[in-house]
Picture 1 (cartoon, rainbow, N blue to C red):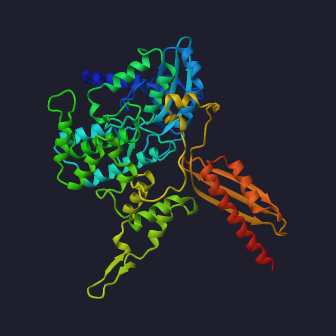
Picture 2 (cartoon, rainbow, N blue to C red):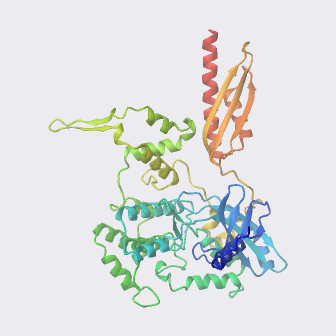
Picture 3 (tube, one colour):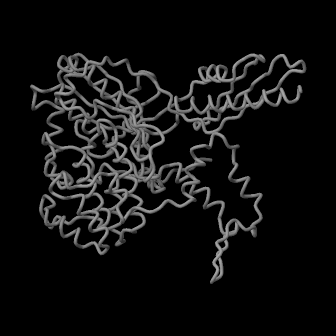
Length: 510
């Protein structure tokens, strides 16, 4: 039996063929992990980037962005290659839940040109600008709670960058370079903006009309986003205050959805002032106005803004407990929250506030939804609710070259090693089992590490009675191939487990 295909399906076949063309692999990274596709994407207007394509991370099974920067003069580029490598190496150290992740870079030297290729996280949900346009098109207004949450996340990222020593200046913060995910997580991209500007000054100082230089100038002069840049932008005196000005404009656009240009090519100062005055909440009005002050020295820091009355709130015990739980998740059994909530009596009393002159307040376990609790913990883990008024648990990395001026970079003589693959996967749970033989002459240790990429690790070894717990823990850490942060946690975990086991063994012997 033969069945004819209706002609109306020819359009869908064409779309399928087009989709297949876009997924065609054009190029692979030297290590074979990243595969460049034909599909071009936009991840914010980043100066100097010749092209940005969708790519596949074959190890993680996720889509990423394949970025390319083209330098027309290979000889001049070669003379400054080490400085450019140092800047990219430092860029790989920047890690924050509200900053688009920079994964890897490598150089591609051709006969007459040099190419820098770098892989970044793909933000599939689109930019904040696109979200605001859709919201306005549907005749919606901005939810104040969402506005506060977004401002907090952006400021958390800026505070992280600015607190490095020396500070990392973003220099390209607009609603096009801020991305929003489906769960409300905000991430800022184009953190490498200054790097490209510095790289251009280093590599092409005598070719002002060369490829990268021209793109930077075109970006800087782009009319659409000109109002995001502070009056002092591009001068020798500019510092972190230029990011605060840009953030103020972003915060204002988030609140009013769009600053009207009134038919002009550029958004005027008057339009910005009118948009600020249209805010009904006086605290929001004062907050945005403080960011866009003409004098850079009068603008507050990102850290100060996190404490502004419109944003600041005393963190609830629930949020503090969630952060504590997430930070120490590797010590807890798998699905411990789910198992614990199942064992509770719904009518059991969880907490009570007593008042002498009026009825007290009782909170029962039935008042807390396990599903809501799971979602809240996931949001905290993803960085949607950062702790903004607590000291950092560890110092920030110091990506020096990102912040250096042309003169300062000239004085840097530190040699840069070849790019290396660093371990970025996290240990989310640790389990160990200790069994002594009948004679008590040795103990067998089995260690299980559960990784966040679901590629787990298992180690085992025999321990003699005279072995030092600390030395053994450090030796096992050496073979675990995990991040430095997890190494410290694992060493403490093993030392504690071995010490307790030896204590039990000696107690049994006695």
